[in-house]
Image (cartoon, rainbow over all chains, first blue to last red):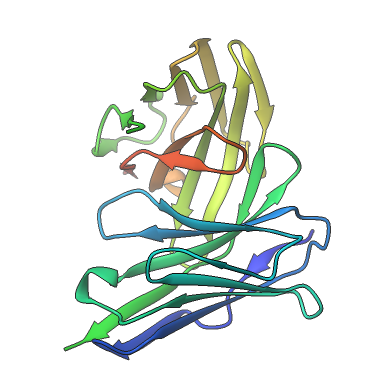
Length: 111
Length: 111
């Protein structure tokens, strides 16, 4: 079946630098792509989403880019802070209700 | 704020026991989900429900059943727990399309 996956399982960045987390997807019929953040001991938390008819969306310190040509999604975090340490999941919708999640990327921040 | 609560954070059960995991949401959402989360495998959908008494199988329903008698409550049942069901179980409810709100998770150990 089609699936969502991540290029890298771990990412380590210096505090204050920008972080870029990547995701590859294979279902070209998906309408929405979503990023979740999961901190240790907690459930995933919605960060930002993007519709398939957009190529960029910005939030507070985060930007999601969608490249439908190569089926690639990325999450950029500006000025990474210690509180950004978490596992980040991309997800795509499957129909009206279901989400398919990637395996996750662990982001660690070096002081 | 949406609140999704799960009955236990940690649970230890013996092989063959019947296990109930409870999830409650307070936002009158119609759609609720049960996932399991395992290292390297991301979140996998077990079952979901789009209304009271309605349920749909997810990607890995074998060994599980669910119950949705009231809109706010979605229960996951392990009829006869096995060691391969040791995992983190996450419940979610869905408000606006594709935005799922997760509970804190239940870490189940089957010995």
